[in-house]
Image 1: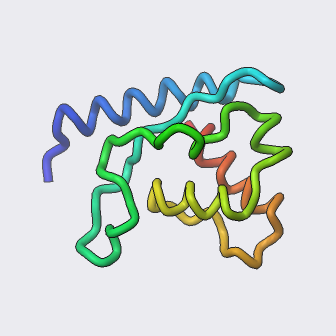
Image 2: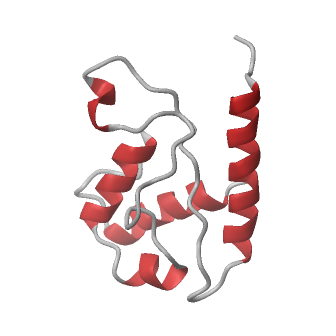
Length: 108
C-alpha cells in the first residue's frame, strides 16, 4: 500500500514533536503526537480516534513534571485507548507504564 501525503505529514509532525519532547525538561511543555495507527474495524475502534488526530485537551500530559507526578493508571488507559498503543496492563507498576509511554513520545 502506498504512503499518502497525509500519512507523511503525520509522520513528519510526530518526528518534530518527539524531538521537542526529548529536549524538554521539568515543566517545559510536552507536544502531543498525532495518532499513528489507522482505525481498526468495529468494535475495536469504537473508543479510538482517527488516524492523524490530536488528543483532546487534558489527555496528553502537559509536561514531564505532570507525567511523572500526577499521571495515573486512568490517564495511561486513556492514552492507550486514544493512540491504540500498549502502555502496559492496569496491574503493571505505574512507573513502568509511564516508561513505555515515554519511549513512545521520544522515540526517533
